[in-house]
Every structure is written in structure tokens, then in C-alpha cells.
Amino acid sequence: GEESPVEGGPPDHSYSLSTGTTSEELLRKLNEQRDIIALLEVKMKEMKGSIRRLRLAEAQLREEIREKDRLLHAASAGTRKRHGL
Image (cartoon, rainbow, N blue to C red; front, top):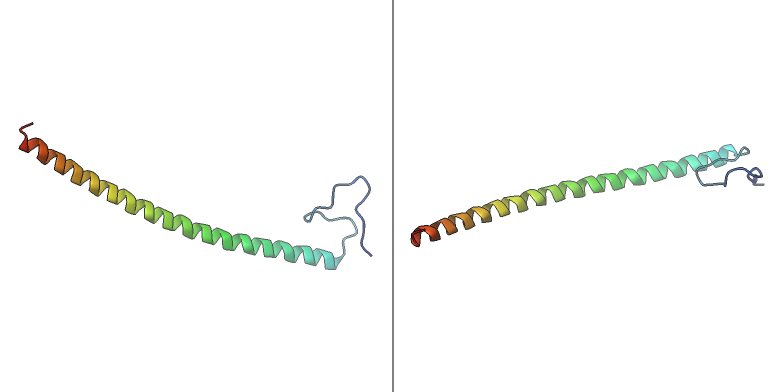
């Protein structure tokens, strides 16, 4: 049979253990935690990859902006020269 939580004790969350927890239940909870950790590690790797891609995209965009600013500056300097400003 299943052990019921102690009266007045904390609620039985998936991460809490009652006093009568069997080895089988401990092993099951441990495996669940291991699965969760493995999943989190996969998600972290995915997020790191996304961050890396975003940083590359940001660097490319900043480079494009610098190039366009340079072209605009050169064009406006040429316009001022032509108009004698």
C-alpha cells in the first residue's frame, strides 16, 4: 500500500519525501529528477546556440549600420562640397 503523508505535515510535492518512502519510490523520484536535469541541459545548450546566433546577427547588423553611416557621411560631405558649404 501507499504511505499517506503525516497529518499536519507539509503537502506531498513531487520533490518532497514522506517518512515511509520505499527504495522503489526513491529510485523513481531520482530517475525523474535525472530526466528533468537532462532536459534542462538540452534546453540550456539550445539557448546558448540561440544566443550565439543572435550575437552574430547583432554584429552583422552593427557592421551594416556602420557601413551605411559611412556612405551617408561621405555622400553628405560630397553634397556640401558641390554646393560650396
